[in-house]
Length: 316
Length: 316
Image 1: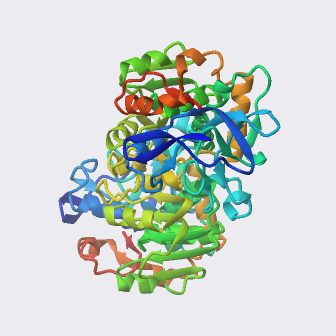
Image 2: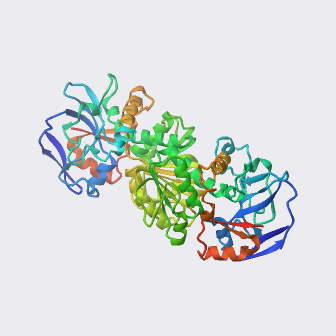
């Protein structure tokens, strides 16, 4: 089968590679994630080349059913898995990281328990967003356990920030503001129900940092109200931006959030299917479709900030 | 009445000052807190001199009843007060901070709703520890909302760390380790049921940083297990020691914790009275009593680390 293989930093090519032999899912759409871009730049030692990236997949299983794939495989038996925190399973293995080749390919191997059927009438392009949106869904669910959501602020309007903002709306935040400095990308987010796009942060009870650099952490601490919550999804880098004195005197909670549980993934997919996450309605604004053979050019353009859509899907 | 008045940094003297006119509580014992030491050193602009410090009080109300005093007055009507987070009330005013003179004096003004009656048979010296112990009680209660306590680690064996460790035992942690580098102080903590005193941190699901400096925050992040919780009580200073990458990939929660709610204060006092917090049994090891007239020498000795007891109580 054909796959988009990363052969070295910033270098991709279409190659013939062995097709998977078991639990085959034929890939119709596979999104490009920030972590793919991190590996593309050569910054992820967990993803040595040659490698097939991509883990945001919608396609067809062996029976021809349309499915979206939870790429995070877990052991199912450890304390994390049996206590509803399977995303922290020490044996977790995500598609696109060895030993599991990713979805920038004509097919992947994904056992049936990780495949969520897509109902008739839901475009596979929308269902492919279940994975990135599940990250925000999970973060908002964790934040709700700690304090009422109140006014919500999202720093960063990429796919993760977008998912967090839509999850805030779906899970009952009083108001949702997204700060995205890229004007073209910000424009794509306007017109989403319940979401305000702003140039600067507003005070908020709940803040999601979907960037994860010193400047966004500092902005989060400056914006969060007493008793409030900061959820940190981004892995941008650095260790600064914290305000432990304010956090202590005003009981601010800062927590890291990683991917999603299997239940979060299913709930997110269901929320896309029934419209609580209004992806189908806004597909044109949110998603750009490109053939996989254009992968090298697409990832180069993404790396240079030349694509405004929050999500690009490759079509093998 | 007589009071121990701070007149300048590192300078205290016994003076005659006006006695309170309403809601009078005659002070029998008043503990010396880390925040008193911070103000004593001249590092707290919220406590300008001349000032009477002290807010850990047991004494007698106007009717002659033995009481311990919750020093944190709140408005009772704001969103914080009516949602069980009264410790975050924007109008909160603690004894020992203007406009409320503190407990290093023969009497303070404390309305009845802030006074918890001490049952017969409970020494007032033990009841005076309700305030510092309530800080740890509150921190452990907040941590429990987020994840099971599991193995607990406390960094710092002063009164706040001691209170946190005892609260961990009382609230069901599987094991409790306290790290205290001061050997004389560590010796005082040995022999407390359920608590191990160690020289170095152990891995833990729940960590309380009762120091709050860069080194202890770094130690907390190094010790906390995936999915675990760090509660930050200390105000030692700095902004370093954070590991946002680990926090994100392993979903670690870091939260600041400030004082206690009125309910926490009452619960802590009740736990001292009924022995769940075994202060009465260990009073000799944990508490040193000194006359208030020795206050200048006592605070100087504390500032130099020459007192091993986790808590010194002044007697007016």
